[in-house]
Image (tube, rainbow, N blue to C red; front, side, top):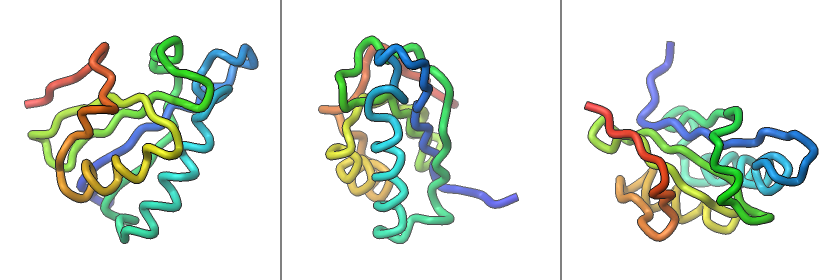
Length: 115
């Protein structure tokens, strides 16, 4: 089983109510992560996964979705973000490549501290 430096969970739950992340920006955010992980040579280092509802959709605007980043490294724990496709590059370059959380995008309503 491969090991990754970090894992990104993108909520793209679709309910058809125009209220959940997949009804908003979830799929566009996921596509942007796919593009940028390849562009920044992070394929095989960062695992990206779809996730079901994180119950954060009510805080997301039309083009936004909830994203959770674990790592890189256990000391980073889990960081919850609310993002648009335009924000993804900042998460990739600042958080995933340089290990610095993007404070301006953090969703402080939820967080998980590991270890």
